[in-house]
Length: 386
Ligand code: NZQ
Ligand code: ZN
View 1 (cartoon, rainbow, N blue to C red):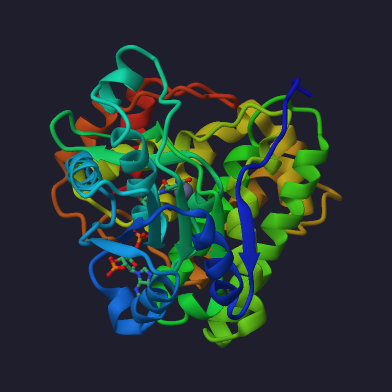
View 2 (tube, helix red, strand yellow):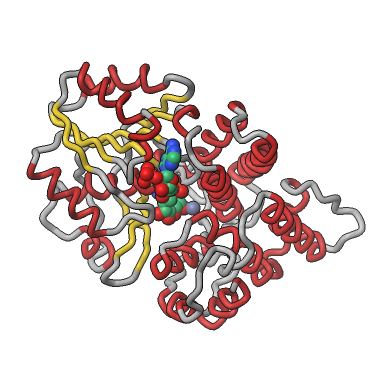
């Protein structure tokens, strides 16, 4: 187990009517001017926007709207938000949406406090922001776990990079499953698969001895698989939606990562695919995972075999470690098909095969706990995903 320091800055309000508990108390601590940030309009159609505006009005806040944050948020959009935040002297940012809105706001919160360019600061100078506008997050689409960490995945269209940038933590997060009920079924499932992916990519990191974090991770994975299956029968199942919402936060709030170095190569490949195709994150992961794992499992057969047994409940008896590991990957593949996620990039609607080479050329894999992939092998994987 690696050494660690653990503290958590985000207060979570979970459950039905969580906003009614959270907002009066939390807004009292916030300054006068609140930036209300959201995406392309789902919050207006669902009624969440009006409800939040009601709390802001009751708290006597001046509201600055920051709308149109797109899925796979761009660095340009971050800059737009930062300019607006400065111009209107925003004291607090309230992000209402899924991972994209929350991520964008984390970096707006940082960029609004400095004249330096955050992208250059982090990627060229390796200096990370330390001053932020305070922010809160109201989750309307779960899966990324963005509400409980300070990583933000932003697309820089100039450099053609989709990468993790470090920004603000939300001081509080509202997780009300009711707010996710208007989400299209396909997005519910791809979001939940993202949670499974985070847990797998953490589990397959190092050290390879089984840690408490791994055993908690096994529980999260089993829970996600079971509850996705429940949703396949009834998309509105409240308990399953609740479990998945909390699992989403659990998989990315750092608890599963305690004492570990994570792998995350599927994510890094998917992010670059996103930079070139603007694809859906969870769907991209669903295609990449099994293909990538067939390339990786022999280098970490013990961990893959344990995952097959503990998560996919495949009996170990009569199988070698590699056979068991492979059976787990087959179970993952079968599950992806069963829940209606795509198995090829073409099924995702990607039509230009020439992007694969560009993705392979620009993937900058930093983790590689199981097996560090070469550029050639990344291209091979991408072509197998086609
Ligand atoms: O923009 P609106 O109109 O709100 O529509 C959104 C969007 O089109 C819609 N939506 C959200 N809540 C809804 C709803 N539609 C109906 N009813 C609701 N209640 O859903 C669409 C997708 O939203 P988005 O926020 O993009 O989805 P998700 O939460 O999956 O976030 C994906 C982004 O998060 C990044 C991904 O790379 C991607 O950019 N990630 C962030 C992570 C983090 N910060 O820890 C980790 C992840 O691995 C991931 O990389
Ligand atoms: Zn993810």
